[in-house]
Image (cartoon, rainbow, N blue to C red; front, side, top):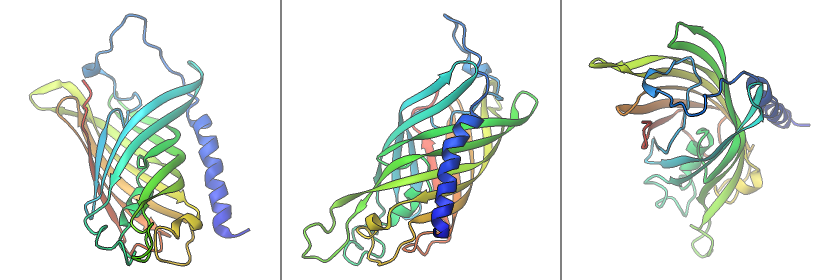
Length: 275
């Protein structure tokens, strides 16, 4: 068995085991009829990374819009839970996509960006969760985070001008896993300290796999590994009804053959802020 196949199997096993292991923590149910005061919430509670629609911009002009469709907990209330999430979105390729459609060298550069964004894809189904490692007071904590699942990415078929399929949208099935740590603490307006939010710093490792046979329809190359990895550093700040922004840089490690980029920059915001 080849080395990349062994690595893929390990990551897929991690994607199946971690949701059960890391999510085995108690939940405190809200009493019936009570209303939660989001302005006074304790920040040692699990952060909600994608509670509403989100817009992501990548270098080269790529744009990804994502929103949660279904978010469920499957398991035993108060004992263990398996977090299941379904996201839906659309990707707008960068300005070089149309110009490179025939030669194929840069026509699908947005695929690289989609590989390393855990919320990308027209449909994204997977498990995600977090585990509290340590906390410092009521507002600062270190958490282990993970996400693993299946998604459908989109690109454009490349080929000769006389090929009727050239330039048509083509879908790419992708398996992914993300694992890392996040440090978060309090954030608030000077004039309104009661409106307490979060500031955070996140470090993650990324791994994704797509069949080489599918990649050949998107890039004018003969050989593909299919398995690609990387590491990212992200930071963000969210204060209710004021700001919800995040930015990050990803460094492809053993990255895709078609991309010469050594780093990928992203910027995003949620367009439906929490009330």
